[in-house]
Image (cartoon, rainbow, N blue to C red; front, top):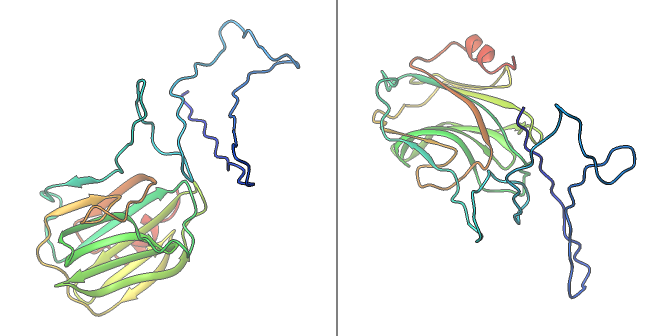
Length: 231
């Protein structure tokens, strides 16, 4: 199989003028520093990448010079044909993140957003380390908000679902109903979807969107619980 091995370490900041850190990849067998291998078994090492940051990012192809990779910002320029009726809908996101965003992280981390601009949209995200969802109509927040459930642990899988209909909203997290909202209009003009980022291109997730699902109806509360329950 294909495996990605990652090592994160902190450089000692003790006031020394020069600090050098080494990451040594060594194969040892029976106490020996070198292992010649066994016929039919072995491993190929490829794609070594060294970068500064709190967690490893996606692989960045380089040659002889360093390269800065743009943050993922995936956009779907049309919602046709799957958005059949803007008055109702349900979206479910399954994801993981390589670090724990604490309450000190005040930047929203968008999972998915469908909109026509920042004033009319449905979205699910992480906010201050909590699960969150939101619907705005005409620039006003009409349903949702930040919940009380912490995001999953680092690299653990989390699931959130957000379903809407006029005066009938529901949010489910990991198989449990987290929010019911019985008041609010829904936006009537939606034309764009963003994955892992906001309408303005910010609020980047920096994580793994494992699976996204959209249903052209407001599913029942029981259905949303099942859709967000771990397999």
